[in-house]
Length: 322
Image (tube, rainbow, N blue to C red; front, side, top):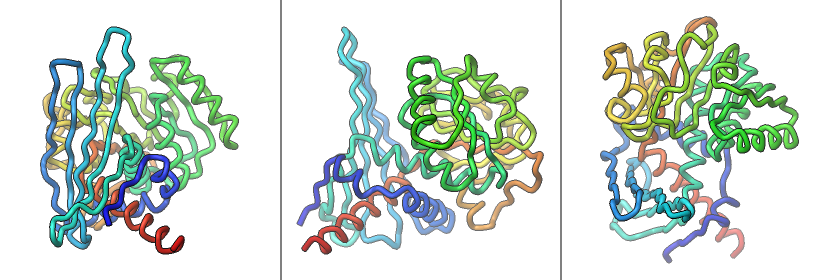
């Protein structure tokens, strides 16, 4: 029977810790050659300012593979911006459609937050207590939620181009947790002295500069999933002792790495992948004063991992209820 799940049902099945583990396993499988990662398909639309992205992936040990379609449209004329997303889960045995996950982008948010936590767990200092989050949208919340599961975060610094959204985020943190939270007027003020910096914006020009970063900081950038997006000044990567990406090829075309390569400030031989760090094939942080950077562009094996988890969890629920 074909499984069709709407966003509300999918949210009841979500598990932050499980998401982090399946995403970590997916990066490891990719490193070991036990996963297939096709290129990203991007389709721009002229009739309305919009773009669709299609990502896919297959973990070879799983009986399914996944295709994800996500789209963002900005119609103009006062009409609201529209975001959509769904995942198609397909049998890798006979090609039949197993599931349709109409998540409206929720699973992308969940797996992106999970990837940020995987990167921080590999690279951030174990005593990291202060995080600066640049951006105040939904992904900022997913990143904080996932980061708190693996580091003893006590203080959150927020900066955003939208003061209203940023203040709402700060108020939400202060009222819903034991964390201290503060809104800063500038990215520079938020970033200085932070143990972890997370950028979650759609910026097309650099927001974070190298001279603002404290020794020992870890930076995770998740906004650059298109060649025009850009959050870190190339000198941030030049300064970094360790630069990790989710996928070398994709990051060299889409991510912060793409801009640093164009600027000629880094060499691809310096780049490691999260899979290599997980596998022990590359060395991550070796000292408390080192600066580390994770450039996350979002890869299809993450979608395959999280979709597979949701389908399995839904199957368990169906069996239990039956």
